[in-house]
Length: 46
Image (tube, rainbow, N blue to C red; front, side, top):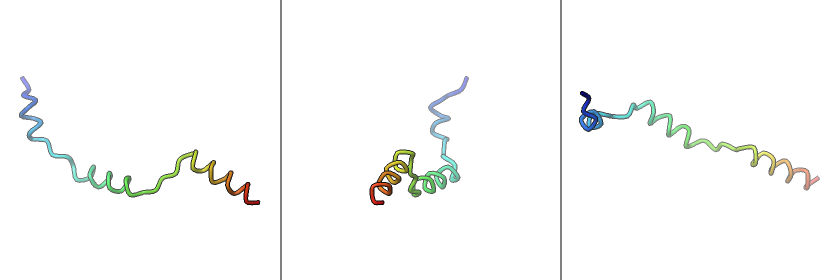
């Protein structure tokens, strides 16, 4: 039978996952609302 407590103690996250978290977290991603707000501001300025 699998000892889950023992297996959890052995677990170490992959460095690739940590690198991916840093890369994704550092990007400034705009969503659709940000794009629409920007478009509306541009239209009002004209």
